[in-house]
Amino acid sequence: MVDLSAEVGGLRLSNPLMPASGILGGKAEALEAVARKAKVGALVTKSITPEPRKGYDPPIIVGTSCGYVNAVGLSNPGAGALGELVGVGKKYNLPVIVSIAGKDESDFAEVAWRAVDAGADGLELNLSCPHAKGMGLELGSDIKMVERIVEAVATTVSVPVFAKLGLVDRLVETSAAALGAGASGLVLINTVKAMVIDVDAMKPVLSNKVGGLSGRAIHPIAVRAVYEVYRELKAPIIGVGGIYSWRDAAELVLAGARALQIGSAVVDRGLEVFREVSAGLAWWLHKNGFKELREAVGLATE
Image (cartoon, rainbow, N blue to C red; front, side, top):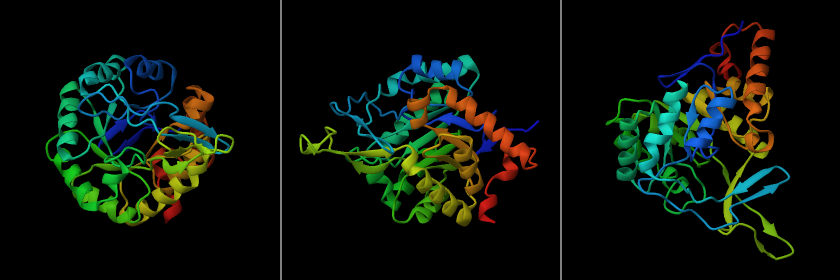
């Protein structure tokens, strides 16, 4: 029997899988569906801002041959919904990671305090959304801003704090700065800035024009990012990006991920994908003589 339990940044999970932020995490009913039907070790909310946020007008998502491009605009119910969202985890005895977005350190700190008051088990700082103006990747591309935001949260809460970073020029350096400022771990990566143009209408499909690419196409990019950061820093990492099968999951584990998030595959294959990936991962570990998931973490970097 293989032990699939995981520990990342002080957060203990019965298994390493969880939904990526933005996937069924904006409403209590959706989170409850994940808790009831999916084999997950934790729940992750949609990125929450201090006040409710409408986001962009449709169209906000378009399918491509290699994944999805979305520009939702960080729409969310605001911090006032945290009690209801976190309550789902308490009902099903699952840890809840609250994803947080904002324009500056005061926004992040406010939502962090309210999330902890609501009973959140961990916080994920969205420093990587590629299409929200003045937020996300614009903040994560500035190392000093990353340090300020992480420090503003990590020094004032008692739960694990994860910095979710995307593709920036100095990812290892930015990761080190986040950890140095107090982050318990990292989430790597977010969607990659992309665009789809309608050749008949001869204009961009998304209302925001530019969005973020998710799905199979970004998986090798995520593997590379996790590998490089883990190799240099041995950091606690939650890997995310294009996981559709146990092989994808195993790749990220070997690159250095201690836990994993699944997003686009849920849209394509439903909540059963968590059970399939978990079973396949356990089989792979057993076949290779591992008794625990943690034994395989980062082996490809050695």
